[in-house]
Amino acid sequence: MICDTLATARIHLRRLTKMPRPCTIPAAQRRALLATILHMVQCAALAMSLYASQWYWKQPYHTSALTGADWVEELVYGHPERIRNCLGMRVHVFMALLAELHLCGLKDSRHVTVKEKVAIFLYTCVTGLSIRHVGERFQHSNETVSK
Image (cartoon, rainbow, N blue to C red):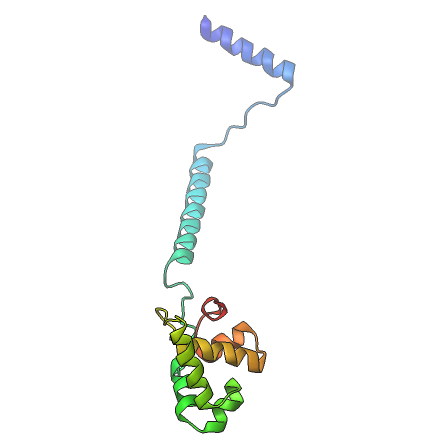
């Protein structure tokens, strides 16, 4: 009796709100739809895991054989005019500047020596190149060069 009353109430409610009858999908179509949705979710999960994996397009950028520190050493011990053209000062002035900055308390950081820091600054001033180009020359990230 209660079931009949509920069924009658549903019919009257549908008539009042003019809602269409719920769509009934055959069981085979429901299974196929569910399998399709499950496959799409699996593909999305696979795509997210590939994107987040450490191997996804991860390739070293600064791979030159000549690091920034090596390049500075080459300038210091190479032809005297070369350091003047690249850093804007002669070797003895560059070395005196390094000694003075050491006395003032400038220290090497974890990955960049004082010699390389000063060379980065002078090279940027002399050439007027962008941070990206200076980073490429010294084989450091843009963040490291701009510090």
